[in-house]
Amino acid sequence: MNEGDTVQVGRYVDGEMTRDEVMAFERRMEDEPALAAAVEEVMRGDAVLRSALPELSDVSQILERAEAAVRPSVPWRQLAAAVVLVAVGFGSGLMTGRSTTPMPMGDAILQSASAAHELYAVEVVHPVEVTAGERDHLKGWLSNRLGSEVRIPDLTAKGLSLVGGRLLPFEQGAAAQFMYEDGQGTRVTLYLTPTADEANSSLRYGDTETLTMVHWQGGSWHYALVGPYGKDRMTELAQSVQGALF
Amino acid sequence: MPRFRQELKEALPGLWRYAFALTRDRARADDLVQDCAERALRKRHLWQEDRPLRPWLAKMALNIHRNGYKGAARHLHVAYEDADLSAHATPSPEQGLEAAEMLRRVDALPIEQRDVLLLVVIDGLSYAETATALDIPIGTVMSRLSRARAALKSELKQEAPVTGTRLRSVT
Image (tube, rainbow over all chains, first blue to last red; front, top):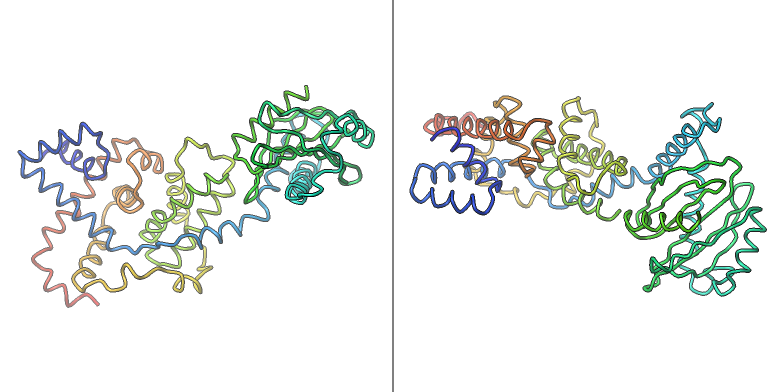
């Protein structure tokens, strides 16, 4: 057998052939006993090698340990790094501390936003302070309390209706949370808080076991969108929010 | 990102066998796999959905192992309790002998052939994934693999008649 055939035997055994190639190869094997024997030999050798190594059928404990080791620090550290990048990009003078000084903004916003989401999204009786029925009042009240005009994005085109909103404390100031839900009652919250440092950032992501979070800065607002959807859907929603705000 | 977790979980059994092939020790295989899983989770934001996870994990495992794994048996205490020994708890004496002999031959292979052989046969990576993991062309994957298999086979043939005498030397 030439070297080309040896490679083809391997491709056959390893499932690398297309359907047509397999059929042609099997026809050849019928005519060429040496080829069929070579296939059998490789399969046997592989089987011996596989049998020489143990299997671990339950990997979930290893995965759980890895997740536990990663959980407390991952999203926040990444987001802090992301916000440092934003600061660099816009020369906002926050560079002095570099990586030794944690950048609290994106970090703190996502922590507050996800905590607020987890607290209120499950609430049946009082998910919001002011319901969507009083949209104008909600807008006026929150604008007043946050000291800057708040706009409430309309996400009905994305299948999300406004449930309402509430005022929340954030660091030394305040933040607003708007809650939306889809037809199945799945809730997404938009968290926003004003900032003195105007800038625009791209979308940055974080996640927990069950939630995907998107953070960005648009002008004098920091936004965080939190929900149980995957990254693609959350990106789409974040872009809709951005579109509705500008 | 549930899909990331799902892919990671599906990749782990193959990765664990590969890690065992590298370390030959259950506890160290556990540690190596956990280490890879942690790194993958930390860097999940770099993952693109169209990019398979398995070559990335395999590459990590190999690099960590080659760079002198110092995981110092973090989980020795759980390794034996958790390990599923059922599949290999009672190999027949012949199987055990053949298996040990096979591992000895694999160890004797040139390292670049062994890398390809273990990724394809043990971790179950495709040729393309193996090429990605080892950063070599796919043609090189194929040629190294067939050379590795040919070497194992010729050793089998050469050594087959002396199996009986070797029994005594195997403890």
